[in-house]
Image (cartoon, rainbow, N blue to C red; front, side, top):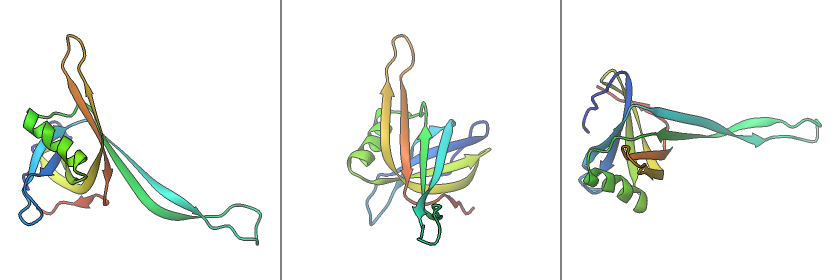
Length: 139
């Protein structure tokens, strides 16, 4: 997979498989420097008749990533992200800091938002549901 070139600190590349399952071709199609993530952990009620207070245990973790004003260099790259969502395919999100790849995760494209304001630049934003936890990228 291609290495990202960060701009002023942290950035995220969106990579889409333009190959197939036999010969994957993970290609960077978008970059973002404005990343927001949300991690949550489901809680499971574990109360018993021994206490009248609710007891909890940790359940599964859930992570989402939002990329606002996503930079997509051309129509083909944007179509690749839309196709991944339409065809229910995973993408790879790769986070870098100061030009060095730090971690990555597979994700599903859950939302694509487009804005075409009057007399201003068009923007694309996307949200992703991680399919696995972030894992360190080996050099």
